[in-house]
Length: 279
Image (cartoon, rainbow, N blue to C red):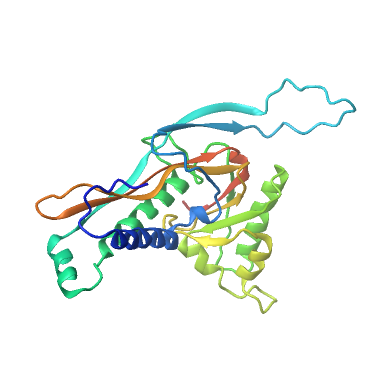
């Protein structure tokens, strides 16, 4: 539910504005394509706990099933749920012109604000937030790492992903997997795999069934392979891409696109980062 008192336009136009914001975010977001959501929890929820699990507890086999006093969760932490937002302005003359000419209001500024919030969300997912002490996929303690080969050599990219997948399998993370690469590495997957007539990315898709993506928030020669599923990670959402009208200001109309979300990594060992050895 958005905070929208005394809107300067009709309800149908506001619904159109909301749809533009949502559609723009969907086209931009990468992390949500493989991370499950927990929520929405409601605008009043400002913090949430996260259980971080150890990897050495296994299921047991027994006749009666005696109670095991060892609790799998190694520790519980609490995260403040930050607000991610971007403000934009609709100018009164543009709104009045749309009314006079009976044409749609130009909501391009709202689309750009939504895009910026979506990029910031992915920035938080992959790199975390130092200010709120939230780890990201690329820097969480306990993750696995793999130093990549020279992907300009045919077959190296596929072999690196096989090796990273094998590291996850050794930790009993047997998929499904999602792969996110920097634009530089993603482009190098579109090369013919040696001794075949198939692009390397097609062979990678056979191993990584939850999707192969690129994200501009990953720079250089980096990437990450994740065993997906809410048992390993999810994203807690209080409010999801809402619009707030901030009241008229100097005859113009400022708005805010915002969301309140936080990434919860429950099993860091379900993540294997692909790192550049030349860094």
